[in-house]
Length: 195
Image 1 (tube, rainbow, N blue to C red):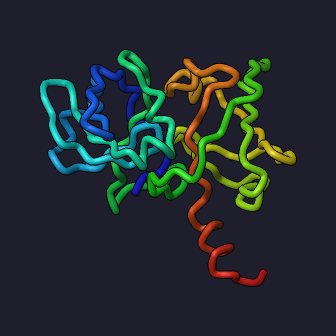
Image 2 (image 1 turned 180 degrees about the vertical axis):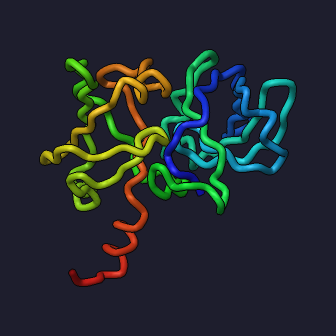
Image 3 (image 1 turned 90 degrees about the vertical axis):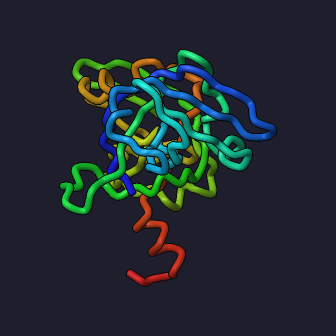
């Protein structure tokens, strides 16, 4: 379980094909806090550490995860958002995330305004049901607030701190991003609770 507050931006050291899977090795300072078998969120995707070395850790990404996330787009030297799992004693500064990606969105606008960044992301129309104005959403593992909702896209604002301390600073229009909709909202819709 995660909270959408990025611990570090890591750099992909190597990618090795293993049949239909990939072994992704990432350089990161937080490696020292990981154990073999630990969970870690990579661009919002919950993965398991299978190996670690001095300043690097490796995860095996299966075919299904590659198909349904942007991890298939990673290349050597790509930058990825990393988050350690939350402790029960942690404050939840963002919102509760599971690291299970619901869909891949596409950046359709990315504009710098005076004191923030304006980011519009296109989604599948049928998933608009999960969007709530001023509600929470995770993009590449970052907990963010939905500002506006359109027919097949939504708008978020990034403050300069978030832009500088995540891999958003490397993103551009037409890039794909991982989206995890708010778990509590999905649960309520799935169970058919009346308001």
